[in-house]
Length: 199
Image 1 (cartoon, rainbow, N blue to C red):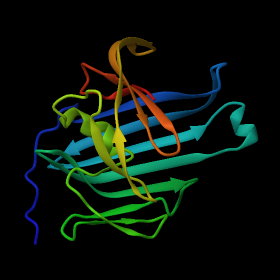
Image 2 (image 1 turned 180 degrees about the horizontal axis):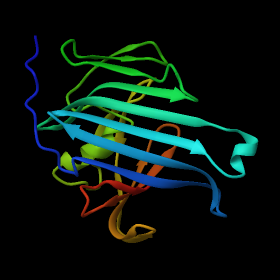
Image 3 (image 1 turned 120 degrees about the vertical axis):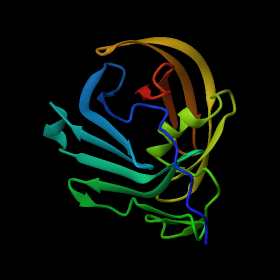
Image 4 (image 1 turned 90 degrees about the horizontal axis):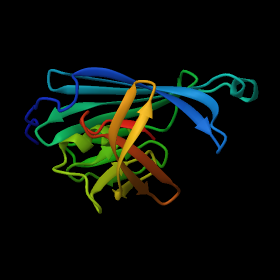
């Protein structure tokens, strides 16, 4: 039986929320909004992301998607236990169950069981795990589980940039994460534990 992970203090605020505008295309058309909430307490964590269409986009399709990650906070960072996605209030098959004692992840969409290596994250926890890395540099790699497979996220470093937002000006680290199907760009706040300011 695996020993319980050693708890650790969070490296970002114990509790908080970030609100985003969701835009499409090059004309900055607002299609929705998103809010990410996190909380660290008693050696555990909970992260929730809510996204929904707003404004004119609602006329085409009203969608509300919620994702939630729960797990332990250890000396090595976040150790997810369950990831779930809900669409318009109903749980989908976009789930992941992390069995650290049995060293396997059960992926809801593919129905497969995958070997679980140390440090594997999910689509929400990996963004907060960045604060536990010694440094994010060119080639930094994280293993991230989706509901279909476990992928290797290799970070490409674009550089430091100042980003102006309604919440103020942030000094950020701009990175790209290419995967099999798309490329994600992140602007990470250097003085806020690398929390994403823009995605």
